[in-house]
Image (tube, rainbow, N blue to C red; front, side, top):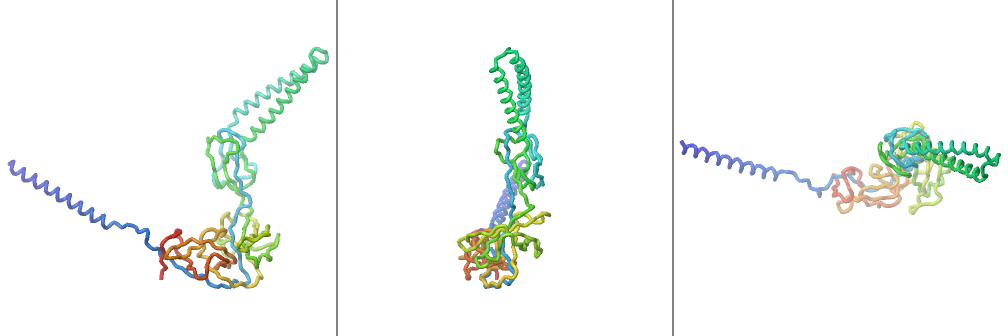
Length: 351
């Protein structure tokens, strides 16, 4: 009987050992099959070289819509925020109370100085009667009057401090950033929020020297936003730079009324010029553009890598952008696949 038990036990141990070995073998096989991402693998992209393009009589200049008014709202009071009436995205009106700083100590100081003023007034009245009877020195009366005047000045100072515990909106707009929470302790000058007024926006564009004379102050121009396609908005030229940059481009600022707030700060925009002569220039497809129109950039392929390259843009007609400088006619410009790229990524042109 004991012999049989021993044989069964040995068999079980052998079976367990074989099972463990099989599991380890399977794990090794699985580990060998795990896919390891090759960070050096080339990313497929589409590319093209700059070409000569004719911009017809109606063409546009690129820019980005920006708010004319954008302020950081600060506190003039010290203390704990006991009321906070804002969240990011809230529309607020000029003078609206956005936050309240604890004013309990100031209220007590005000009560104290008001009691002092009342006492000083009583003393002044009593001393004025006594001086008529020569029962008190005139210097005492003057001292009381000065004390009363000092207390009234102190009261005005406390009232001003109390007013500053109500933090209000300097103008109507939208809260674009909230920097504090309920219960935060702040000091004078501490920022609590950022407010942006988008009822009027500015569009700043770079205009080549050959076209700058076409823009005049207070000139009415047609402005469009990429997101709205061919729909146009009316703008007015509010500033024309008197000095060109190194690329001989001039900055022109156009103000656009945005009463219905259909346009948003940060959107791409363009201003159109009518009745201009056709211009033939080196250009690239607009879809190659990455980054902002203030600092236009593209990916240029060099030695199998994507190199983020800045360039100066000129005229645009919605499909093509003029290259003023920064890109040569032999450069390979990536026009598709940019979303997967970083500077210096390995790339391969799809065939």
